Length: 207
View 1 (cartoon, helix red, strand yellow):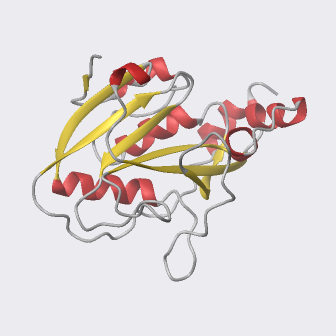
View 2: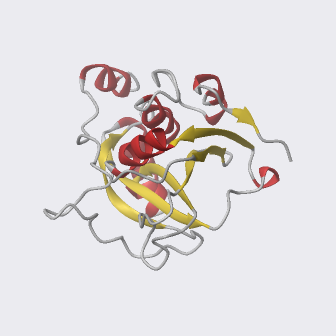
């Protein structure tokens, strides 16, 4: 059974739609961060002025934090043995986490925080890559956010992609960055400590 996730990941490609078509952002440089929160990584992107990709009530937030994970474990906090077994060894439903931030997190609040700047074309491509993870209505809008969860500042949305321990939240971060040339291939990434070595052009932010 332990070998099934590896075999599944090797034989079944990631099921996720093509990137969204987003408008041209204002010219300039934009900051992109990868945050190591201890057991899972997240991508934090400076949102172009005039864009409204944030969760309801904070659509125009200066920074947007994106993460992804297993619905039962991450969103529902279901840690019962059968749920954990499914999370580890079976393809399970996933969620996208989106949080609005006035600023990037301070380096001391994370296990590690890495930063780089990108141009307008790259930030547009990255946000399109991240946004395509959310399941969408026929009109292209994200499906409504799931009910709020105590302890999380952001909101969860139904997502594309099957969760497995070999294709987990940290793999997802590298995969999304790889899609726009900001990281190398995500294969083999499981732990947050493996993420920095796959990033292209990022520097560690020191407290």
